[in-house]
Length: 352
Image: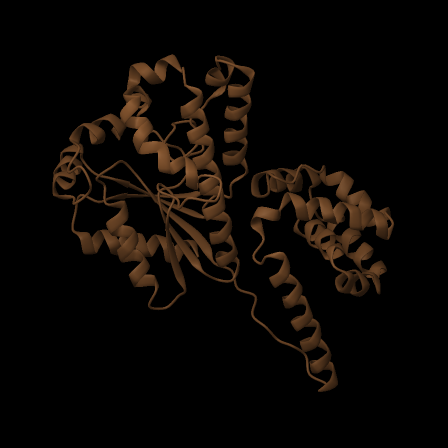
């Protein structure tokens, strides 16, 4: 599967097209060798798990590489590149400059009769999740500081992604709208009776869609850093089940009961964004007794002061969050902080 994607992506620049097609029979021979030792159905399942945005059937990619002309390979390579555009490590201009530098380095090494030996490294995305008051922010900071002594580490907060050009102006009006329409507050939608109704206003649905865009943008930038070897540590992570917390807020029933076709389209668009987001390699799922969480919340310094009702209201939702296709490591944060941090760091080292 990775061979197919790599070969097609090599048909996206003139330099790489020339290089890969200079001895293309060797590529066909390698593909034939891989097919004899691989399970196509298993490869297709892996492609769907790892790269859900690539909707091209794997057999179609195989036929294109094995029998297709250069033009067909270029066309399919462009389709693959477009499907993986949110995983780009470099922008278009930077990628073009990088290709020029690599070609120059290649010919310089040939001129000096030396081979260019380089270490291909890759980072990882580590997410900390759990109910409010379990110590996500504190532990994320400590883990980042510890790993940062030996690795390149970047921290992000997916619960509060920075605004993008699309959401900047709407965010300015959110405080005024919440005051004018108290029923549109997030806390109202988190109430069990409100969630059971699955009735959402267009204002709420648009807000959730904008947050999904913001999270995708933040993750796109983070994945570029990760592909260069950076360890990305995130406070919170989109759940793969529709809990509405840091992930899609709408399940199938909510879409069926949508108030209008436009609202239904917005919900489906929001779900589509979350389905296509990359998944963290490791999820540190934190837990603590609810009494401990309430006590910690009282000591927090934040706008509006402690909010024990929010802790109780979100406890069940956050505890039920699922994170499919990621390594899960459960950590009880009720004990000594240093011991908890040591457990978290051990889990990270084992995963990377």
